Length: 368
Image: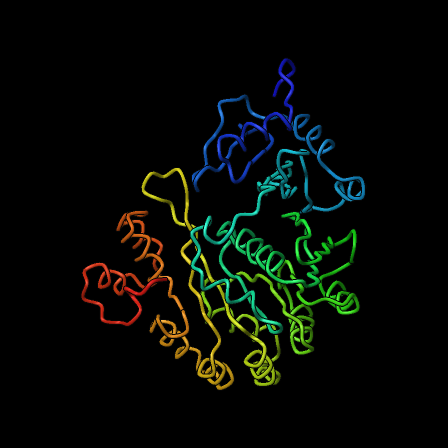
């Protein structure tokens, strides 16, 4: 930040976390910026210099990556200010200049109730096998929801939970369960290898940080079919898209077989968005929850996915919840405005009807 005022990254991160930042953006030639309650705010400091970024990178990057930083364009890792907070870090280049984005990872893992998530999600913790997928765009709270689910299992059951992450985010303390956390490129070379070797470590639950490719899907399906519970994330917006995304990793000739595998192993999906509240100081999750029931199994196997959404819309059926139901509930309870609810809805006319009270689908006024 110029020759006279050095930029101390730990001090800046502490201040950012204190004011409620979820993300911190640093870029050469730009003033530092933070995201608070979903909104980007520039900080009134001088633009950062190349030296500021290089000193920051030298301070925060782990030893095992220092030789790779100059050779790779995008690198992810964790950084920690002991006894204060953890961060997921991404180093990148933008117009040939260094840039860093920090995502704040709190030490404290909140419960479903503290996150304003429906109790329905607790039911996913009771499965002994199969796959549970948490989906949504970047910054939608997937990691936080998964951390709550894993910690709920940790508190309730005596199990061995193995996490395979890139990088490790939330840190778990053993409660009733034993939690083994493995980081890509440090503890295991890939998600696929991590799953393969996790199966030899007497696991009950395997958390895969992200399903990115066919090989990871195959390894996850294999783990679920051999009696393990698999939890993972995938970048889609709703339950139906999630099934299609997984099937489309495979060649057309293989897709019917994969649909059969998925119909037998998928236990449920949680698709969520983070929605700004009335006071604009916080955001609350609006989840869409699909519970895989015998009719859903049949629809997945027959590739009749459009009928799955009709089932979810029935609401009270096996505690399923649509995105519109969640948005309507947040609106009805006064947490969000009508405009916000409609902005985040993918079926605006249906939500308009729900708000006007003319929608007759079941489950709208049920307790979510």
